[in-house]
Amino acid sequence: MSLRQRIDSREAKVGVIGLGYVGLPLAIEFAKAGFDVTGFDVDTGKVEAINAGRSYILDIADAEIAGPVGAGRLRATADMTRLGDMDAIDICVPTPLRKTKDPDMSYIVAAAEQIAKHLHSDMLVVLESTTYPGTTAEVLQPMFEATGRTVGVDFFLAFSPERVDPANAKYTTRNTPKVVGGTTPACSDVAAALYRSAVDTVVPVSSTQVAEMVKLLENTFRAVNIGLVNEIALMAHRMNIDVWEVIDAAKTKPFGFMPFYPGPGLGGHCIPVDPFYLSWKARQTGFECRFIELAGHINGSMPAFVVERIGEALNTKKQALNGSRVHLFGVAYKKNVSDMRESPALDVLELLHRRGAVLSYSDPYVPSLVHGEFRLKSVAEADVTAADCVVICTDHDAFNFASMLERFPLVVDTRNALKGFSAPNLFRL
Ligand SMILES: NC(=O)c1ccc[n+]([C@@H]2O[C@H](COP(=O)([O-])OP(=O)(O)OC[C@H]3O[C@@H](n4cnc5c(N)ncnc54)[C@H](O)[C@@H]3O)[C@@H](O)[C@H]2O)c1
Image 1 (cartoon, helix red, strand yellow):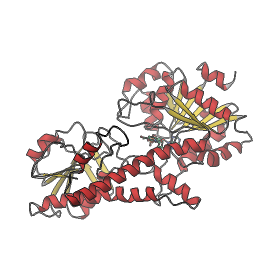
Image 2 (tube, helix red, strand yellow):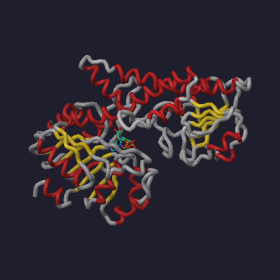
Image 3 (cartoon, rainbow, N blue to C red):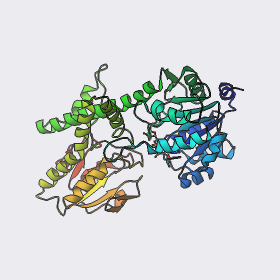
Image 4 (cartoon, rainbow, N blue to C red):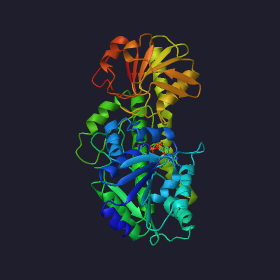
């Protein structure tokens, strides 16, 4: 039976390498679609949690794991030799930046080395990790073809970008359209068939390079537009205009405008990182990505602007940052998630620390925080009493924002969480 037939009949065994924010929901979706799914991760804590039916991701309830695990359709392992039993493998490992802002391909290469050892005929491998255009053709294909097999004939290779949006209740793995590009038409055909079984809409494109660049365009679009609106916020502040009111009015235009909002800076694993994968690759062709660099510069300056606003707020009380007690509400990179990766709150904390502020924070999703020399524990919102200034850094729904204006002498709001309020102790971004 061909792989295509085994996919159509759900007899194909599906492996997912990397069981994080992307890989775990995908593995669950394939199990729901009727496949026998094995998740592979080097983190044995995650492997044990899944096999015990326990979730470690906020958006995923224990039952969503316990169901398929109990039914024998999903399991996790750190034993990479079992990759040889798989018919289709999705790679969902991290793609961070090195300190130099160059792509760190070590996780993809490590996963591909394991697959190459166990590659067999008729196997499908799909890369989902966000990466620069050319990774699938220039990194993965040669590694797999070095085993003596030919892509599109003996095995199939494709790229399909993940679009998961943590904490988004409306769009999930199932109902978010999935772009798929294969190395050859046969590769595209098999990969699209696999995704059609688990995702409502599959969008085929002509190559792996196009699929890789689609993801980078999407995230660069966000990074650049956030950079633009952050610059408008800096400008509006100088002109004494409320940027939030401007955006609210502008977005009443029913066409040709899409609202983006200013904030304390970019966070998460994607938006601050992915555009630099593109600019790195473009530089190799002698092309300078000016928008990406400029947006990175403006977005990267936002934590310093937040600290400037905190300084201005304290100044109205004749207080200095040095020695003042500054309390942050929310440290996760966005509302209602626990993810701290690249969170701008860390930069804000660091800048405040350097200026001698006495720091504390509340975040119901982040019980403790270890970063550089910081070792802080979250304080319950109701227990925050002695603060000279509080800063709304992440607008988690769990916070009681309205009470903050009465409870604290100064409130700096970087998210417009106090929309509609006006008070002498309220300082917006
Ligand atoms: N988190 C998001 O919102 C999001 C959205 C779209 C795309 N992406 C992209 O998806 C990819 C994965 O992101 P994530 O957020 O799921 O990362 P993550 O850190 O949550 O998960 C990655 C997992 O891979 C495991 N891992 C690392 N090396 C491994 C190896 N050699 N073998 C097996 N397992 C290994 C890690 O232990 C971890 O559990 C990245 O390229 C990211 O840019 C992420």
